[in-house]
Image 1 (tube, helix red, strand yellow):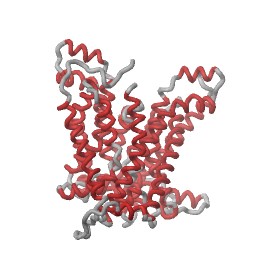
Image 2: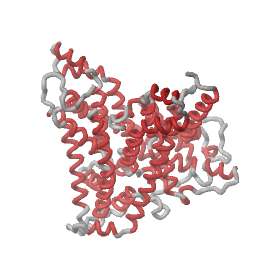
Image 3: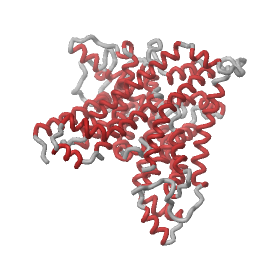
Image 4: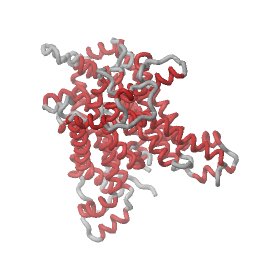
Length: 273
Length: 296
């Protein structure tokens, strides 16, 4: 049924209006990243200006920016790979060979995610300190893996559960052993699901800011904590701040957009699909 | 089809213990060790500055904690922040979800723009808002106020907690949007058309068909956001650092200050226990809702 024209115009105006308001701070940051420093703080604010790449050159010229960027890559990808290695077998077992306690186990895993980070800040800080893990990448990799493991297992579990039983049943009758089933059938069948699980884990680790600020000093500092150092009031370098920020959020924003439909289930533990 | 997680298995029973063991052991350690240490430290006189201080003090840290006005200030700030952001994100998120559920040109792109803030790291979003938008001299809002002849607001000095709330809400509106939109799209179109035929329209349709359908998703959004909002830290760290005074010090930030700036481990651990109890009250209901879902 075709709606009247006025209603369709209203729908477009409302949808686009809200979208532009929500996106505006990012857009404004992206514009500022291409301004010169005096233009960035000019009043009235400049909407039209001659874009320059100078901020990006200066940010990237500082060798340490790449250092922080690679820390973010290592920490988020490392913790995700480790999380998948540990979580894939567990999700497989829970989805296809559930024992009596499978449900309790899942619920318990979920409940470990409810621990507020700040509640265990003191012991984790002291344990890291005595183990020499403060400001180390390996410490963050392990920590982020533990933080995201329940989400990884749950999300994989919901994808595995959707695999039609008949397919696996047929494979079994053909004599495929569980490991063969897993590698040759299940992994290809659920590849999109596994990929979105990995992306969500990377996104969450990349954007994590509590542990990275409190447990790193410089050697292992990822971008979240590095950007926080711009908050000290030593002059207004807004254009460089914006360029550094744009580089920091760019890749993750694209990941988020790619996987937006699947990550709802990961974020809600399968409660909303 | 009814499917029960605990009955159907595929193929020969294989031993699942080796598959599950790594996850279970890791999560068990991760849950128990820090928790036990927090509880233990919370009953110790323990300062990183004063090595001679030590020993079991029972509940004395808790007594200090509950007679400290800073704690109640921090708790009040936490509740204000969490409640404010929840209301804002659910109401605006619902508006975005309903708007994006309509047919209009470029809907896919509008959807991407709407959910983008969720993927921005907290330190970046806090600094964009603090500097580019809310700075009292060079910020865009200050310029708009001056142009309109309104008084210029020094956001983080005058309304620190509110300003932090605006940033946090901006980050969490997309989360509500995404989940409510997913839920809206599973709404039975035939039911809507039938109600429309019966003469229901506009707000009545929304009130009696759409909103009841969304009730469960809204509950889930509220609970999951609460868990995360109880831990908001970076946004305060880079904008107000808890100030001015302690006007924007929430419970997580207070614990951080006492632990890593004052080095009072005992006191901070007692605060940590309070934070864990608070989060677990919410978690209890969340876990119940989600585990109901497993039986479907």
